[in-house]
Image 1 (cartoon, rainbow, N blue to C red):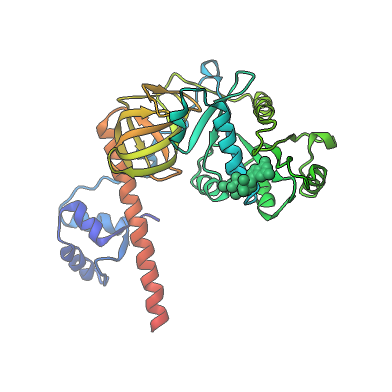
Image 2: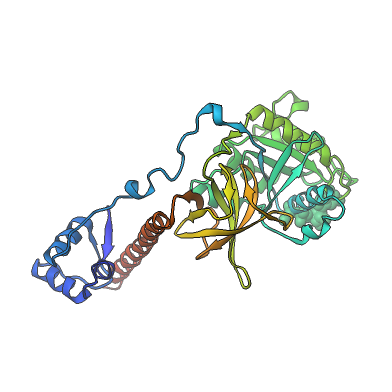
Length: 370
Ligand code: GDP
Ligand code: MG
């Protein structure tokens, strides 16, 4: 049910909280400033104090922001977005770094020091591939919990000298729950004690049947250390993506997801955003979570300033008035007043939820003490 704290209600009416409390007392309700009341009671109080009440629902505010369907003739192929998962120390970071370095052309090397949480590479076939450079199941789970689906393909890294381990199993379960196809990268094949066959067998016990065992899961033996078969891995990802027929409409206002965000001393709030449909442009008004801003600059994964970013492109967005959170969905809106309407509403919701939780906690604490 919709609730509001007495403080918040008073603030919104520009009345004193004590007057709200007095009115509640008249109706026989004892309340503290931090207590919450339901929407009907709040409306009664507001009207009693001579205010006109317009109740705004989530649907009113969020209407049309996301998931407005595109006509199929407007859809164009887009690059896959890949997350690397696997057990700790099996080589996720090494693999991400090796793929990125192998793809940086001479002269662009300066860009590699830049870390924006996601990057795009070109496979030998010419296909582009976007990697989310925040390996870790926590990030994946957090995004999913917020309803953000950013990953098209999971590359499951399994060290050939160690085999299937608890976090390998966890990753398989995550991918299955999210209905995202897996590609198995059997890593560290350079090691003398590498046993890739054993990995394949162990995977069978978790219902992952690789191609060489007659299954449908694509696999590649790699060495992140010696940079073996990295091109092959990229081509296999390209192959898997063709099967998925990934498409998006690039000619519409952008939608995307915040991959990570920080407050930078010099540049202000900086959000790394994966654009998922449409094209993001400098000058656009964007909302993400409870924050909004006018896009002042877009910076690519190699540190270049760019004017636009289309589907599956990761980009740093500068110009937010506050720092959004990883997992927040980004949308372009018509104008500043719409951006304010959306983010004011969300900020209020957030405050009210926190207040409700806090007063609930106090309630249960008081019960415990008495
Ligand atoms: P993460 O925890 O999955 O990100 O694993 P890291 O990328 O940090 O790698 C863990 C360790 O394995 C490091 O010492 C790496 O140098 C090593 N490593 C990663 N890939 C390979 C590989 O292909 N061959 C060998 N021999 N060592 C590797
Ligand atoms: Mg790592």
